[in-house]
Amino acid sequence: MWERLNSVELISGPARVPLYDTSKHGTGIVHIGIGAFHRAHQAVMTDDAIAANGGDWRIVGVSLRSKDLAQCLNEQNGLYTLIERARAGIRSRIIGSIDRVIAADPDATLQALSNPNIRVVTLTVTEKGYGINRTSGMPDPTDPVVATDLACPQTPSGVLGLLVEALRRRRTNGHPALTILSCDNLPNNGELLRRGTIGFARSIGNDDLAEWIDQNIAFPSSMVDRITPAATKETLVEASRQTGCDDRAAIETEPFVQWVIEDKFVSGRPKWEAGGAVFVDDVAPYEHMKLTMLNGAHSMMAYAGFLLGRKYVRDVMAHADLATLVERHLTSAAALLAPLPGIDFGDYGVALIDRFANPTIAHETYQIASDGSQKMPQRVFEPALNALASDQTVRPFAFATAMWMRFCIGRTDRGDAYEIRDPRSDELNQAASLPGRNAVEIIAAFNELPSLIPRALKSNKKWNTELESALSDILLSGAAEATRIEALSN
Image (cartoon, rainbow, N blue to C red):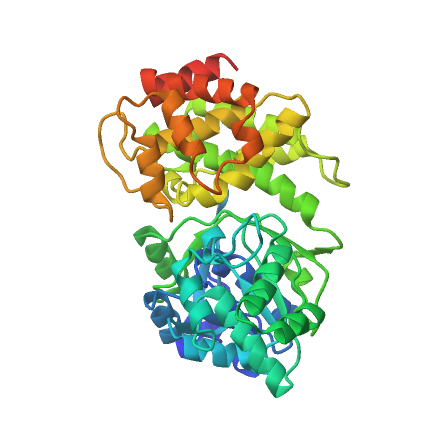
């Protein structure tokens, strides 16, 4: 049935079908990391762009590791159901912008990236997926995938290796230049990826290629925002109700969507404005706003909420003490931001609270709590440094950090064990699980971990006083009681 889905009469539910014939549009984008977020965000805006303006902009998806999702999508000819859940009800549509998905196949991925018809490469590989050292901006040789690709650069399997080898082939064959667009929650993500890619080329001894990349390839920065929980059995049941089809690739999300993109493309782009994308000269202020407010508050509520037994973000917002601390975090974060034309940070905070409290979105705190070592530096540590520099309170950021450290013990206050899903899980668990669980000793152990907590933060007396106080309360009184006390003292 999926292969004939352009026929409206084949849909027995209310879902909207694509507003164009998918067979009449070629591919122009390769997307690396075709998970739920991409399918709720960039793929949707690309669907809107093709519907409004046409063009050969359909997407070749790449799954670097998993084959299951690729199989589902390929069996459905790239089609899937997008379910938007709002307080007022459900709206659904079938997305037609994905042409096919390559699964865990580096050779096929290189062929796609080297295809002259491809003009844009987008990525959502999460913060940890790039293999770039945040301090140096160079490829991280301690990353096993990066190390393997540096040793065998013409048979890569990781992000940097695949990009550099594909660019080498494009240059050799005289194919058009590319725009490579990161869509992950990283500060200045375009520049980070540019430096990492050029650095990889230099690290394999190909300075000529590095210079060509520097001169010809665009790496715009972007800021993305759309709360997208992992799909559940209920998601698939709802997709069946909405379409009359068995859709194993269905996803659900909130109505809100935002994409702010640096307007720097070398070989054209889809008219993403049709889906609401905004093109600007400088993404940094928008990126800083989101990382500091939304993402920072998300991390705090993920660790505290999980430890208090709150499964979903909506459950966090239904807990009076946690809701108070979320509001405190947002207010403190907003006070650190420079004015941004057209944006009222107070209104933005109110809108975030409403989005967090959406009772129809089942966004798990445990899902958000993953990869803390990759997220905390930009979401919490940088705002803490800015608060210290401007003589503002650091307590909300110290509390978030203390909850993260407590989470890294890997056991609830009741003794229930859980997995710390983080590329540095062993280090974090060892630092958090010192005998006696003394706050001062735990903080010292975290401070000794390389490339994690900024030196200026580790050495700051005010920060250490607040962090020690917050962590001591959590360890001695338990997460729930410490949260209650924290909310009362707000």
